[in-house]
Length: 427
Image (tube, rainbow, N blue to C red; front, side, top):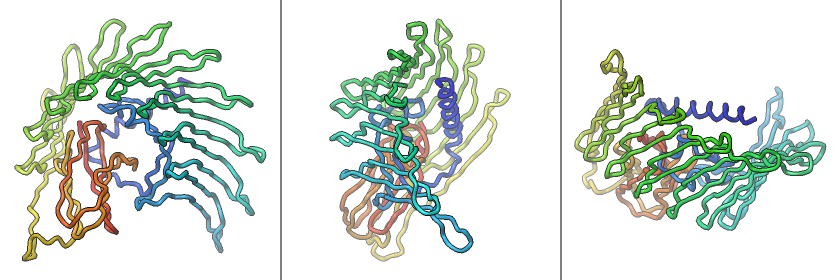
């Protein structure tokens, strides 16, 4: 079973890395539904732990939240039989008073009535932390347990334990357990996985994390439990400049006695913290060998003018792709240039960015303004604005130092006006 799970995890990880390499060329539209459930609980892998803590990546919430703030309570699907619509399947959702989803029910139509098929149930503590996830199947007119995940937290709402169990006829049988520890700043310092051997918990693998004084992740160490001892597997190291810009990423593997270099990413920034160069290299025959390079140039207003991608072939950089951008200042045709007539959400700048970017918007009248950031899966990442604002121009900054590289969307909603734009975090 563990080998199968390992293959699945590695497959997902390789898919993510492939996506990351093309992140500057992919157009992704935000989903209509922001679907948060157990399946979106991120595990502590290298794609999500680049400077972020366990509290950020292991959020157990369950909501199917529409863009306009409404909760979805039922999805009904029908098929057309040439003359009328016929019921096919139905999904029902229930919530508690804090809008936490407490049940997800899936039913199918047997021709005359709805028949239960499967159900997910969720419980929460007083701080809205999910404490249990239960999966049941409808068998012989009764709900039968299948899987259960249990969660515990410390006084700072950091998840300290995740327990996986399966139903063995009449009792819950242990499967895996994940233990997390934190420092005084709530940074995750260790993530330990243990498996149940039938009578006791046995160590399986462990992640250890080190941070600098600015809470930037500087080292991520992976170890495996072999012959009653922890054995090094691989290590990732991160360095930063005085502005907390990520300047180097180093991946090394353990050969049994020493750390061996594998690949390295280097980043260069200008005086405005705009990323100007990304260099990818591999370790070959005791030396770093170039692989690919991204170069970025900007105008005096920090607008990105050019994006250039090159490959290292036969000891020289060969051009591959280039994007160029031109801009014009916003001018008003109204005699009174101070009057705002329309809602408007501008492109963030710089873009791509690391770790901060500026977002500006205009509102023509006093109204409640809501601006949120989402990842490519439609998961809410952060709320930047949620307050009543008067007519005017506004500019806000988003610091994504604790977020992983990738594509994000920022969305402005004010009254009936809604607009979404894309931005790229490249560390």
